[in-house]
Structures are given as C-alpha cells and as structure tokens.
Amino acid sequence: MSDPLAILDSWLDDARKADVPAPRAMTLATVDPDGRPSARTVSLKRLEDDALVFTSALWTRKAREVEANPRVALLFHWPELGRQAHIAGTATLAERALAEELFAERDPAHQLQTVVSRQGEPIDDLDAIRDRLAHLAATQETAPACPEDWGAFRIRPEAIELWSEAPDRLHERRLFERQGTGWKLTLLAP
Image (tube, rainbow, N blue to C red; front, side):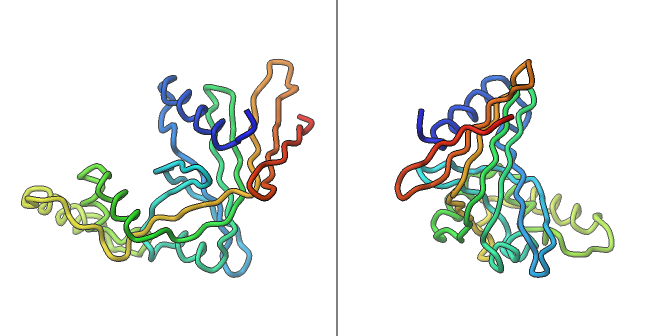
C-alpha cells in the first residue's frame, strides 16, 4: 500500500479491534512564539483523504500556537500493537460547519463540559465549575449549540513515518513524504 493515510486508517481500525485504550488519542506538538515546544494529547475526530482533524476551543494555548505557527507534529503510539505513526504537517482552521458537525457528535457530557469550562484558564477551584455542570446536566433539555469559539483543525501531512516493532529490534520505519499529489516512500534504518 503506497498511501500512508490509508495505512494509518487500517492501523486505527486494528487498534480499535484490539481494544487498545483510546486508539484515536494522538500527541499534538506545537511551538509557542518564543520557539518553546508544547505537547498535549488530543483525539483524532476524523481521518480524511488528505488530512487529520481534531477539535478545540479557539482560546486555548494550542489554538493560539497553531494560529501563530501552523507547522505541527502528531504522534500515535499503540504499544500493544508495536506501532507508531509520526506525522508532520500544516494545520488550518476548518470551516465552521465541520466544527458544528463534530461538536454535535460529542458525548452530551463533553458538550456540557465545553460550555462550562474555559479550558486552560486559571481558576480558584473546581467546585463552581462542577456545580454549574451539575446544574446544566439536570436542567438542559436540548443539546447545547456549538460555541462560537469552538473550532475544528485540519492537519495536512507533509511527512508520515510509520514504525513497526520487530523482535530483533530491526524495526521497520517507512517515511512517506508528500510529492505533489502523491507520496515518496523511503525505508529508514531502525
């Protein structure tokens, strides 16, 4: 198979079938304006033909860092399967309709959490947020609308390295680099 995103899709399916915890969890690495790297775990919401999609509140550090420098890296790691996928690419804010669609697919508790908590902002304690969440959960009759400051980010890969563990430690490393509309494959030494 010469399409690394198709391979990634099959690996995600393998991880799901193997009951790997959080098979769509990926580390997102960004860089702040001073060049300091920052990494956190996000969830892959959609794998498209030429992009990976995650969602975030637009006021968060990750969203601000992507806006300032859209070059990002992703890492999937499935130790149970002996596999990793490392992706380097460019992130862009996707269309509002996609953010709304993906917000509507969120678990209702996650929707409410998004409404009551300004992720990453300083707080005095969690009690006020928990009280507000409990109140909304008890009184909310319909799903909340997607907040205006919630977005979807599309990452278009420029390079994808697929790593497969081998018992002799001669692990397979396939580097796919984008060339026009296709991919150039290079096998790397373990």
